[in-house]
Length: 249
Image (tube, rainbow, N blue to C red; front, side, top):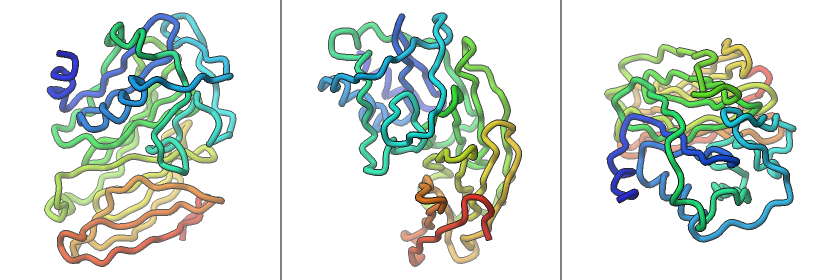
């Protein structure tokens, strides 16, 4: 019955919580829901970190400490870590209490297309990217209901919609050094100030006139933002680009 309910989720992001636990994010696509919950049902490893309850329950969320690989209080990239495991060692949700999960609050991107961007969390803020027009939303996790802190609208070209093979999707962002990096469907990589929502830089990489689009979630390694193109279904050659995280050129 619960699995059936997940299958019917399409345009909303649901936040599940229990008293004295951290929140778990469930995306609209059922495959991502399975990725999130299957490790939990299999039994997570114990963690030695002290995890605070959500702010809505009277607790205080842990701030981002800059330890990308070891701090399970954060989720700074779509795939969690450089190994792309999508796995957390937090064990507050397990086979003994998973049946007690309930909706704490919901958020709607307002776009009735495929929602494939895994949310990321850093410094008590959740960042969510919508399908085209690729609006970036920042939600305040320190307050009940996760109210909107700000939103950034990149205004990508409408022509990109006709070049996307498999809906107008985006597959997520990455947080690093105070910025949120992500791609727009019309072939730009953007860097947005994580605190203010202001554009730091924008770089044009893909050519939609050739069938190229950009839907992948970037990753950041040693100050370089790694991105690539989409469009193989249309005969587009793949490429990889590295951009300076401080100021792209």
